[in-house]
View 1 (cartoon, rainbow, N blue to C red):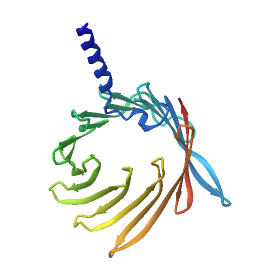
View 2 (view 1 turned 45 degrees about the horizontal axis):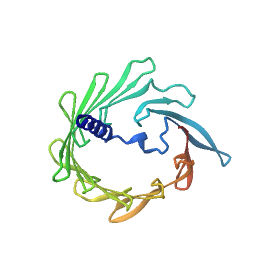
View 3 (view 1 turned 90 degrees about the horizontal axis):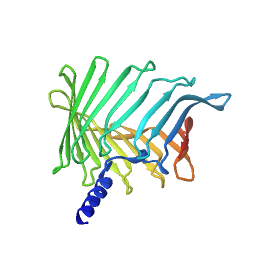
View 4 (view 1 turned 30 degrees about the horizontal axis):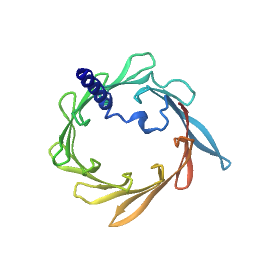
Length: 274
């Protein structure tokens, strides 16, 4: 009897720790098994806004919330690729994604490895004869991550240091050239709901040259973004981007409209199969 209780406990723990790093259903509510999103470009004729389909994606999920397939279509409704297919480890980390061409040959592959905390520690990208590898060295004590990227021939691709706060939100990214000189630095800030609401870009001399400020609604979706450039220490507004949403009864977005400097430019409509 005692052995049976131990076995049941092990099974219970295993079931509750599996897929622990998976973002189930990509954060959508209601456990959808299929999500179709159609994006339209807004064109104007005699000041009348006309929506024309630009592209469509369909995402498929299994019952555990893993995205298993993405199908993509062009504006005329024909497939743009043969789809993207995803594989996961037992903890829910995505370890492979393969994009196929329409003739079922492989277009590209992304392969990933993770540590015991669900952090990505290696990524390999393969497309035809091109290959690149990115190594992520994570220092959990100091909450830093070194990102080292190399092309298939061993040549330099990227070198960066990312810093995190005590909740493992990224707060700074410093990029370097092949000889270790800083090229850019980005600072990240968050609102009280941990939405990323501020980006600040600095150049090699640590001079601020661009920054963004974003406001979110109660559903944690962005509703307005202000993009600025800095010149001679003056902040100049470059662009204002606004978003409008409609939600279904499960509080998933069914329509998103994008406005740039108050001009309606794009709309995306979503259909969910639960």
